[in-house]
Amino acid sequence: MKNIADQLPPEIARQIHPDRRKNEAEYWAVRGQLLDQYKGQWIGFADGRIVASGASPVTVFYEAEATGLHPFFICVGREDEPCRIRRATFSYDASYAGEALPVIRVEFRRVNGSAGVVLDRVIPDTAADASVLPWADCQLLQLTPAMGVQGLMSGVAGGSAATLSFLIWAWLDGQEYPCRLQADFAGSERILGRDVLNRLEVLFRGPSSEVIVNP
Image (cartoon, rainbow, N blue to C red; front, top):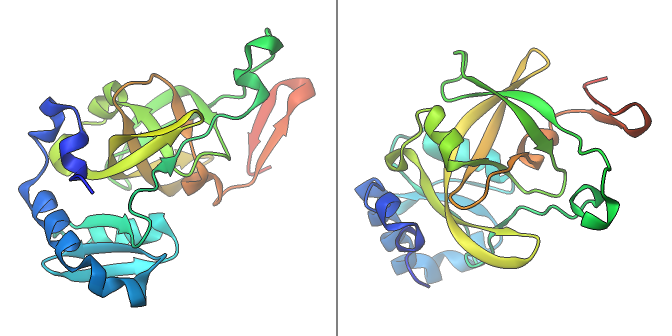
């Protein structure tokens, strides 16, 4: 498989931390030895070893990043499957012109416990594997390519594109939640995915056009 970092926009790829590239290359060198034990699991790989593993991508991502080793983050045996960002709801269907699109306001924080950037028109999307922000919003959060982990993402139409994942936090309803943020270098939508939504109770009250978090 082609190095994921090289599939990013060139100006972004040049800024990837060199240890990310090294750890990705070393992962592919030993990948065959990991299949029996770790197939289907998410892992963080750094310095020639697995530094975190498990079934929850957001949990493994956080544990791996906590090592400070700039690990490569991947699902063993499913490396070519992108993080799916689906938008299969009637709100996106042009034949339903005028239908309301549920949106919420979320504060995204680069550092946990510290104030971040409040963004509106964030779409709560239970069909999205992870949260997504346009690259311009990522820059508002002072995220840089050197801080990101290379990966793949896909939209409802299929295919895949290279992305960077960032370890950040989402603040809603007085609580802070871990967020596995994907940078979108082509789109403009803000999406809150299941990495955060699965930790919340969300009530969609369509007739009154309300989205209630933790009702």
